[in-house]
Image 1 (spheres, rainbow, N blue to C red):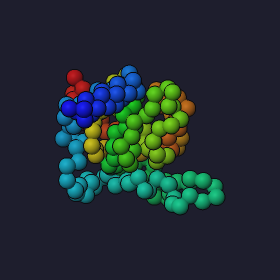
Image 2 (cartoon, rainbow, N blue to C red; image 1 turned 135 degrees about the vertical axis):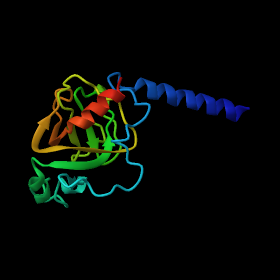
Image 3 (cartoon, rainbow, N blue to C red; image 1 turned 180 degrees about the vertical axis):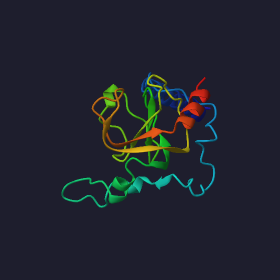
Length: 181
């Protein structure tokens, strides 16, 4: 009986702590990840006009004395349509979202500098929907769009600079807009 009371108390404390750190501006989770985004098994080759981009293609490794440097592969893909597979970051971004090589949540105001967002995270912009907030898709997802290499900053995430951005294909933007209704 005592163990059960301790367990319930501990669970309540953890729940309260998690609720206190919830970001009010985070988008709600989608009931289901749209099929066009879902990665449920190994992906085949992308369509002929789409190049495969991987997060390991963003920066040269290991980092040298000049810090992080873009790879030749990334620079070569600038302006082309690419497919990228990653995790949608839980963040309040209107008109797009952030894609990361690992699951991440952007911290609250009191934790702004203590988040787990890797430097290779990509800002994904949705076409023509400046104020549409995409719902959160959990798990691994794939996105296709036009790659733009160069510093990009989201209006919703001031001070955070991304090394590149991806302009989501219009067809995927429509699918995401439908899923958020």
